[in-house]
Every structure is written in C-alpha cells, then in structure tokens.
Length: 133
Image 1: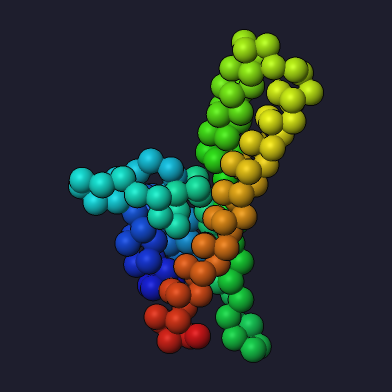
Image 2 (image 1 turned 90 degrees about the horizontal axis):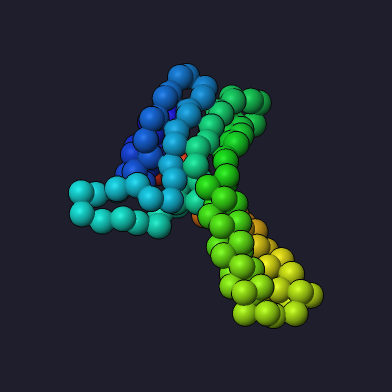
C-alpha cells in the first residue's frame, strides 16, 4: 500500500486517505504537481478514485474505481461550442450532428480509454516497485 500512496503523491494526487485495504484519492485535469508546472499526468483525466487491495490464495487482488466526470464535462463543453459555431455558420444539420458525435467520441472516449490504460500501467509499476511483480 505504501508504494501506491507514494506513487499517487508523486503524481500530484490530493486528499489521499488510506486504510489497511482501501485507498481514496482525487486527481483532476488542472492541479499543480510542482510549484511552477501544470501537468497532464496519469491522474489528469481522473477526478477521483478508490483502490482496494484484497489478499487471496494466489496473492493480492487489486480492484479500483475511477471517475472520469471532468473529462466528460470538458468534452461536452467543447462539443457544444463547436456545434454552436457550426450552427452559426449555417452548416447542414446532419454534418453538425455528425461532427459533434465524432468529437465527443474522440475527446471523451479516447481520454477515458487512454486514462484506464495509463492507470493500469501506473498500478503495475507501483506493484513492481514494491517487489510484487
């Protein structure tokens, strides 16, 4: 658990709460990781999360829940702005709707899928550093 806490601290997580088997944290898109830089680290698309560790017969099981609501909100805002520009510029409605759906898929779904992959790699790295990998 120590390596997970340390890894989250290095990534700039806030509000880290740790018990024996559970770890809660907040991340977010715009948080200072060091005094003079904003970063798009592993926690950037993740608003908050919970990591649970369970000891079983073959070893440890890690379960996690992560919240991507900031990504969805930001992507929706961008899509609404672009759609508004398309309507103001009298673009055909089917084109405007198609572009909006494509943008939402690329921005939201793309960031969520990348965020999950990066978070899983982060967890594996923390476990490896702890000697469990």
